[in-house]
Image 1: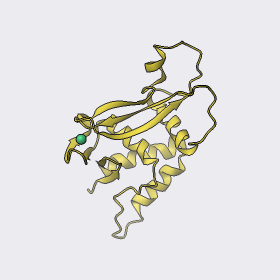
Image 2: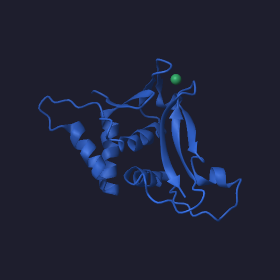
Image 3: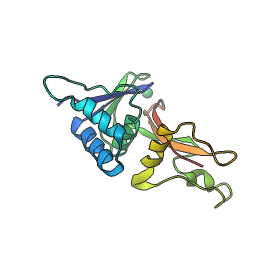
Image 4: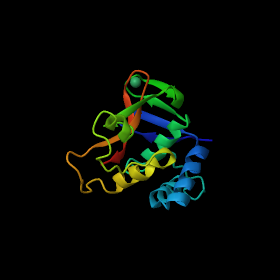
Length: 167
Ligand SMILES: [Zn+2]
């Protein structure tokens, strides 16, 4: 079965079609995600010898799906800078902004004064979805803090990043 390909600035990701569709269906059902529905329709393409295996750039929602799959050590990525392919399990987890979760940073600052919009565990992507939908949403604190997570290749080339929380 052909893999689904997703490109970022430095990486070309390949995921098994069944894994991608499992996540898309979950997002549709559990999160009522119209974006997931749109991407699923595009990739299924109604049969008839039509093959859409590359996720178009404008579907930035797919970044969430990709990150979820990498977290589960599914898929592989070719790093453009190394010109090498790595398994998801070989990638390095990296932090964005103020950390993967507010507590990474907040442990060193005043506790309890910031109101976090972060959602942990299986639900972090709800915030990521909100950020994608409302990139210019009014910030409510000063200075605002934000963070997220991503992955780099074993040689520290940043391959994918996503903001998953902000104050
Ligand atoms: Zn690299």
